[in-house]
View 1 (cartoon, rainbow, N blue to C red):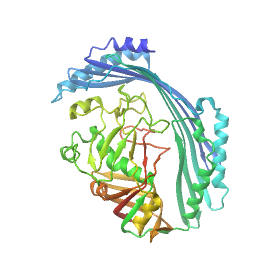
View 2 (view 1 turned 90 degrees about the vertical axis):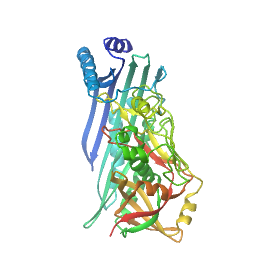
View 3 (view 1 turned 45 degrees about the horizontal axis):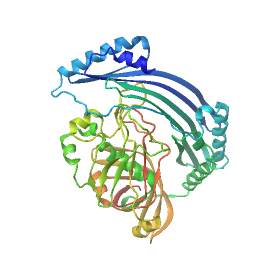
Length: 454
């Protein structure tokens, strides 16, 4: 394969070029209640070629080898056209030449598990919630995505890496008269098929929560001191803070670049944030990004001070900052863009009981449920929560929305737990879909969160 890719690149009249070839295999098994709604397997492949010519940088996607020469000509032509319309030429940060192959060690390769066995496992999980009287339905899907990637560049880098993702995700719906509640359920990762097995307790736990929600009271709106669980805190970190750490999102926004200057004090002194795609067996793990750059941990915030940013080769040069290995594509259909890998608040020193005692009276908010950001402002739904009174977790609450200002909220994080949980099902829709976008962290204590309710 590499000989073929090098032959294509040899026809590229450019100052720099690279090409990525991928074979993508997918399996999807979906249920809506007891009904099997989808069972599919799909295999596709394709190429992405990029070229830097006279300061213009362009990409071209093609799926047939016979179209390679046409794609190479087109990408150079487009690079020249872009160069003529730029005020400043594109430059790429220099990087080391790498020659490596990385095939992950899996705890049971999903490709070696038969479709009938996968089907019956999902069917068994579907039956767990449906055995309860007040469960209206469950939607549940198994998804398996295998990306076999080959990358080479005119600078001599040559990489082969597999990304293998398995997930089980869906929603359980309960009903009592006119009252309907729902809860999300999911597990998965990059460690192999074994993580999909033995998930009966997960289904039972989520079923109990959605049944308990039928008896929960809607939260009363107001400003509260709150504890956010790892999922809720992780979504805040990803959505409200993490995207502003992606250099391509702020490079053309002067006001945001000013606020997000390295060295600025943005959060409380207890706050440390990292993006680390090198954590083995986690959903967000990879060894090399789609520019051929080795992934590395990036300290984004230390003691509340902004210390780093996520980059492509282009933005690293533009900002004069180090490469981070965070330029990722959904698959062979796209050129890569800057993406988070595994972003989280680093654990602190407080146990959960410590946090509850420090909170005294307030709310314990669990598991994100949609949301949106607009500039510095954010709004997220929560799947459920609890009243906290006198340092004790009390009644369940529902219908929760939290909102606030990013920078004020970062300063209002006053204590960080010593636990650490990362998401097993991810996803980010910035420009492209990244199913391996991972987030999480510890429990965190936040002052004065605005809670929408009755």
